Image 1 (cartoon, rainbow, N blue to C red):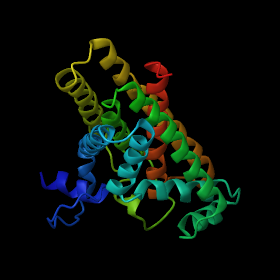
Image 2 (cartoon, helix red, strand yellow):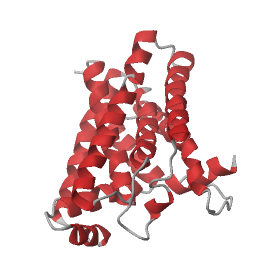
Image 3 (cartoon, rainbow, N blue to C red):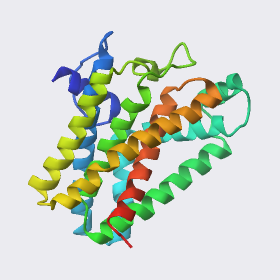
Image 4 (spheres, one colour):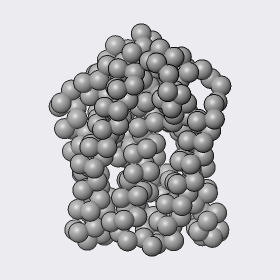
Length: 256
């Protein structure tokens, strides 16, 4: 339980007044990444549900996106900006890492974050309009699992960094348990809480291989640029997987 609370504090801004601290085995909290996503997903769902009782679909969608930023402190969005600023500067490895570490926002950072938010807004709106708000619960579950997948057998080009706690630390056992958690959460939430049919549940679970392929492909691309990954890359991966998931749901469930 301590490790779960610890990673919940680390990955979110949910106020939990318990001092867990960090130790050499903090990376073992990665077992709980999908569960952290589940907590966030439930909160997104509640925000969407309550908001839809008062506002129209557009404002509800905006409120959901605001919740995703407030509850995570914009941690992963910052990673998106830093990643695109560095990678698309088309410089050498050392310069890219230097740009990514710079706290100032460049043009690529602003545009990437803007486009990502606009894409999310449109896709979340389609989910709100369809009335299938339960799909929002699974979004952060897959996104947090993607961080574990990205960290597996990876290295970092930096000696110091927040991501170093996790990069290269997941074991195959950790990956398999995380994927199992993810599948079980989808099946449980879908069947017990929302009474979804088997086909709908299978459709969502089918995103697991899509998430794995996309994540490892993105990591491979980043490796070609900086010979490793950083904490910013992990955050960026999480955000991109959320968008890919929303696109997947849009196409799979025919939300037109």
